[in-house]
Length: 110
Image (cartoon, rainbow, N blue to C red; front, side):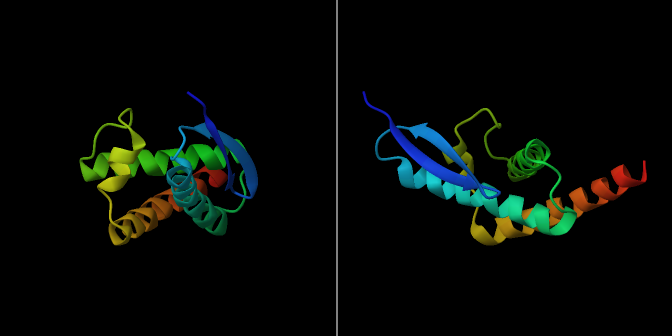
């Protein structure tokens, strides 16, 4: 079985991702969601380095998953993503961004 390759941009950086044929648009949509979180983080706390930004976005997504009662983070991302509507997702991103701002403030004071 052949694999497709999709190039996505996260925080302005291109990443090539392998996926099953026909899943390209799904991968691009997931990347757009992650990039939206990264852009909000960059706007609120600035650029903190690629690894740290991606770690923070991962924590936000894990927090959203745990709050929705969706399958555990180890379950397929598609199943968790289907349970979220856009408005609820935006509200959770805002709440998580506020929490991250507080954490960032505490870290800069330490």
